[in-house]
Length: 181
Image (cartoon, rainbow, N blue to C red):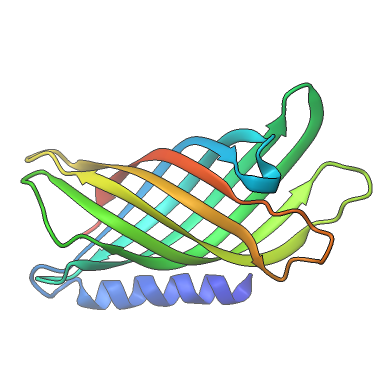
């Protein structure tokens, strides 16, 4: 957890240093949406809330991003809840823009804290990542942007116990961002 805090602080400090360079920008936003379990986890559905920060560089179609998210899942008719807290870093590749709309492909690596409210279950730290696509809408003369994204998350790709079910999910959401500089 401490390493992630240091990583995020370093990214923001580096971004601040580049803030004086023309064309460099940092945006951050909050969002949320729906999530549905996949594979072994397909009988669960829920919602997600998240934070995303993006660093834009002049004439470079690749934007570094950091993400933090909370997902809560339940199964219909059962009081069992699964929670996934995600901290990650990755990139968005946006080689083309259509005026105010910029589509992108996204890829990230993440550390996931998995918990459940079952009596005999304990929280676990697992590593994985996400792959997805999205589109960012930047209306002219408007102080906020809208980022619609669909991402498939591999939540326990690394570190999964032999008897542990996969907890992959598909999430779709909207992020409302503001340009910090």
